Structure formats: structure tokens, C-alpha cells
Amino acid sequence: MKRKTVDATLLRLLVGAGLLVFGFAAGLAPLPWLSPVIFALGLLLTGYDVLWNALRGILRGQLLDETFLMSVAAIGAFCIGEYAEGMAVMLFYQVGEYFQARAVRRSRAAIRSLMDIAPDCGFVLRDGKPVEIPADQIAVGDTLLLRPGDRVPVDCTVKEGSATVNTAALTGESLPLDALPGTPLLAGFVIGDGTLWATADKPASASSAVRILELVQEATDRKSKQESFITSFARVYTPIVVGLAVCVAFLPPLVLWDASLLTDWIRRALMFLVVSCPCALVISVPLAFFGGIGAGAARGILFKGGYSFDRLSKAKVAVFDKTGTLTTGCLAVTEVLPREGTDRETLLRLAAGAEQFSTHPGARAICREMPDAPQPTQVKEVAGKGVVSRLDGCEVAVGNRRLMQELGAAVPPDADGIFVSRDGIYLGAIVLGDTLRPEAPASLAELKRLGVEKAVMLTGDRASAAEEVARALGIDEMEAELLPRDKYDSLERILAEGKPTLYVGDGINDAPVLARADVGVAMGGIGSDSAIEAADLVLMADSLSRLPTAIRIARKTLSISRINIILALGVKTLVMALSALGLLNFAGGMWVAVFADVGVALLAVLNSLRTLRSARRD
Image (tube, rainbow, N blue to C red; front, side, top):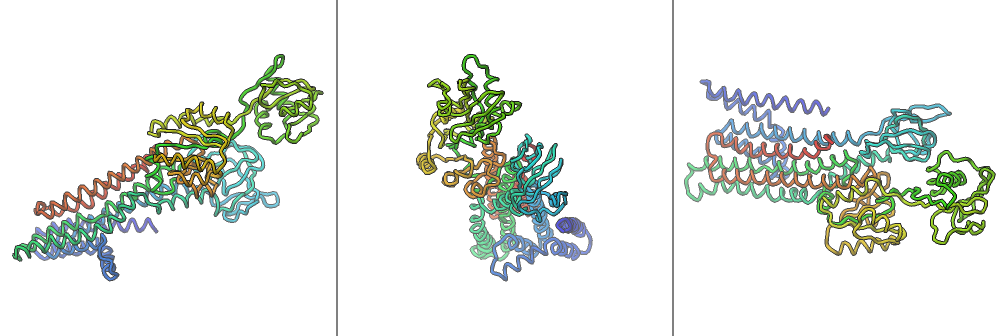
């Protein structure tokens, strides 16, 4: 249906252009009445909807909109005998509207194609057999079969199997995700090699893909300062220019008391009205922000509205949570410290073998270092202390200092970490720690290059761990061992310095601080309602590298919107002044007025689309 509407409009404009040419040709014929008739037909064909909307506005008491301005200008030109100019005003106004509408549709379609990625159907196990059903009929708890090439139909958790998963459609992340039992998958992810069985966590209507699309669409309603300015400006601007046009048309002839001047001054007023139409501002500035939202979505960045661009572009202080933001939030082996007479591989092998059946995060980290460790024959969990296992005929213990003391293993007083003993003899320690995000150093350095003056870390972790992370990343200020309320108070002190401040957190525990910051940035908060509600910006890829990209998009979008405002107001003000002074009172002067309206509007729209085009190039 939309395609037919676009083609019908284009056909109407092409026929109108033909009538304009035919009208000029008819002016050369010996029939003087033919040319005005052709131009009148052309005006009605190309502008009947504009004229009707203007009439409805008059009947409703809503006079001062762009359809009213164009209708008065076109009909007024006919009244003073400028038939070609009257039709041309309407034709080229409609051409401008047509291309503006196409630009808006294209930008909306581009964003929808980026985000509307969840499939319509999925395979669900029924009596042990896969049955394809519509996605909106998949219930929470259903078992899904996900084969190579399938798109995940609803948010789910892997129950069985392993596969690589392409997450780029939602997160913008090029590297595949390794999916194993327990891995959460979002609707729209694409299964690579491998087959998975997963449990549905949400219905299709509540999937992350749907929520993200809703968020992008809602973002267009949250206006920036520039968009709000244009909306308010248009309400004041339009009645002012209509009043000025009336003064230009009638005041000079009345003051000079010369009726012969009336036609000349009405012509000036009509050109003044043509130029004054604010469509270049009303369309192009919001389109610039819509393009910025689309560019962000293509890179896995969700702007919650135009106001996010204003704040983010000015950020001078960046405040970070530690765990899950600057670090991965996953424990890993950072050091292996065998005692004299024990080698590193033996220590890891014994520890991983003893811990194989433990679900403790520390145990899982050790086992990842030695996946081929032998299996124990006996395992005893000692609550709050560790495990004692039977391995290769020996008693192997892995745990804290208290467990070692109970077993008689002599641990050096300065030793730290998880301790390992065999038959009551201390063998060494394994140190675990949270690992830095690999992209964190480069991302913080890029923020400094973009003008962020200070990086601050606020964490509830112990001071020693926080200091290590701060040193590694070059953090300017750090506060550790903070409760959630302490973190909020610390942010208040930073905000009191008066510099625009952004806060980056995991979007769950940090919701109050995200909401309080000038710009709240949620890391990897796609499925978290608290993140979406509290933050101004959501980094879907769960990667800090997206933050500098978001700042660049915000600045580019604001730059484009400012260029549009300066271009439109500058050209219009100049040509309006020339029209009022009579300096365009020559053959073709009305065409200059048409360009100042339609031409400038098209240039501003094309400029606005630069943000969306840059997303396609990346």
C-alpha cells in the first residue's frame, strides 16, 4: 500500500511538471486564455491536498501552518496574474515534501531493518519431536530446538549442546558468542555451527528484540534542546512572518496613498511568504536526531532520546563502576605460586582435579586452566572452607587458610590466595582475580582524547583490588568499599563540581546512580528493565569501546542539526529581506524564493541523513 502511494504521488508530480512546461509553451500560442487554464489545472492537480488541508485548518481555526502559507502564496500569485509562478510554488513545494517524506520513510525503514530481527516461527519440542510454531505461541518453559542458521525466536537459556552464536544484529559485536549450557540467548541471535536445546524465558512480546525496537521508536518522542527549540520557534515564527507579509503587502501603498503600487507590494509579500515556510527546520532537525539514533542502533548503542545527545556530547567527567564495567566480572587465575619442589602444572592439575565437581566460581576458574585434570574418587565439601578430595590415592585439599590449619598444612604467613595441600603438606597457592575488560585501556584513552578530563572509579570491592585496577587503567580518582548509598553520595560530590558527568554501570545494582548522573550509561543491560528505565544510554554489546563511539555520534548529530538551523535561518532571512526590499522584483524572482524554501529544505534533509549513511559504511 505504501509503495502504491509513493508511486501515485510521484506520477502526480511528473504530470504537474509536464503541465508547467506545456503552460509555458501555450503562452507562445495565439490563444491567451490557454496558458492560465493549463497553469490552473496544474495547480489543482499538484496542490489539491495542500489546498484542502489549508481550508480545513481555516475551518478549525488553525490558520498559520505551512499549507496555509503555500496556499496563500500560490493563489495570490494567480490573483496578480503570475500564473506560472503560482503553479511553480505549489509544484516545487510538493516536490520538497515528497523527498522529505521519502527521507523520513527511508530512515525509519533502515532502523526497523536493523532492529526487527526476531523470526516469526521457532521449533519447539512436543512429545520429543520438534514442531514449528509461531513465535508468539511459544510459552515460557518450552524447550526450543536451535539448529545451525536458525534465528533465536524468543529470549531463552541454553539447556543442552554447544554452538557459536552470531549476536551482531542486536549488539553490533562482530566476534561470535560461545554458547554452552547456562548461556542466555536473546531473540534475534543467529546460531552458527552446532545445535542447541534451550528453555524459553520470555514470551515473544516481551523479548529483548521487541523491547529494543520499542525503545528506538520511543526515543524519537524525547526531544533534544534543538528539537524543542524548533517546535517552540515554529509556533512563534509563523504568525510573525504572516503579520510581516500583510504589512509588506498593504502598508507601503497605504502610507504612500498610491493604489498602483499594490500589485508590486503584494508580489513582494507573496515571495516573502514562500520563503518563510519553516518546513526546512521542522523536518530536517528532528531527522538529524533520528539518523543519530539509527547510527547508534547499528553499532549496538541505544540512545533513549534526543536529549541524550546534548548531555553526552558535553561530558567532562566519566565515572565507572568496577565489576562488570571496567572488569569482566568473571574470576580467572592471575597467579600460580607453587612452593619449592612443586611445579606449576602439578599444582594446577591437583587443584583442578579436586575442584571438578564444585560449583564455586573460584573452582570453575581453576578448572578452566586445566580442563584435562583427573577425576577424584571421593569429594567432601567443607562449608566455608573448601573441598577435600581423593585423587591418585592421595588426599588433596583446596581451600582457605582455616582448612589448611585443620589438616595440619603449614601455610606461610604472607601467602595469599586459594591454598592447595596433598596429604597434609602445603604445595602452594593459586591467586584468583577479576580480569580487566580487554577493550578497557584503549576505551579510556579514547575518552581522554575526546575531551573527558577525569576518569573516576566507584566500587564496593575491597581497596587492594580496586587500586590494582585503577593503576592498570590510569584512573584519576578511586573510591572503594562503598555501599550503594555511599556510591550515590560520592557521585553527588562529583556533580557538585559543576562539570557534565556520565556514569557507566551494569544497570542493575547501579540504577539510582545511573538515574542521578547527567548521563547514565548501562553496560549490557538489554534484558534489564531497570537499566532501560534508569539509563540514558544502553550499550547492548556490553563493551566499553562503544562509549567513545556514542560520544562521536552525539557530537556529529548535534553538529548536523546546528548546520541545518544556520543554513535554513540564514538563507531564509536573507531572501526574505531581499523580497521585502523589492530586490527580487524581477522575472524569475519567485523562483529564487522557491529555492530558498524547497531547495534549502532538501539540502538540510540530505545533510541530516549523513548520520544514518555513516552507520551503513561502518
